[in-house]
Length: 227
Image (cartoon, rainbow, N blue to C red; front, side):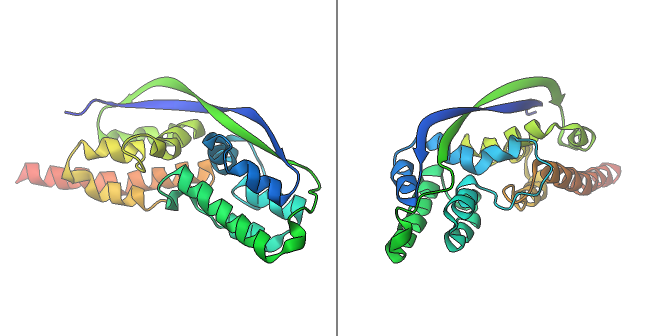
């Protein structure tokens, strides 16, 4: 039998890289070799920051290009980037650079246009906490999921994709150890896009999927046992 699922919580500590861009060309220059953690921070870090407003853009690059450079076209192209569609952060970095360089090559005057405020490259350090909560069986997720902290959702459903198995969240990785009975649930979890939802919305969706799928598994198991 698989080990119980160890529920963790986390927080992100923002660390300055000391790099700043004052125009689009400088943004491209720094982005080429800045710590890869900066790409992660500027796409995912905002999820862990308390906000009462719906963000206009999900990543900081698109927001800065819109409000500091005033380039609506490039901000829209950057704004629709979904990091989950890329195999790793380096591939995402390359795509951002390609979009910026393409824009620089077609609109010459924007290369050195000074921003209203500089873009500050930050990276993040994750700090992990053990909640001491253990989930013994998949069916127990129904009872625990509604009590997950947003940091738990971030750590297990978003940050986990950087850890082996690459691209898979901790819930699916753990469920895979329980065999084919939970294949359908793993498929349902894989269909949830973590990027264009807030952590609160992600938590609600996870609870919904667990509650919809797991009782059905229990019912099928009980039916087999009563035959």
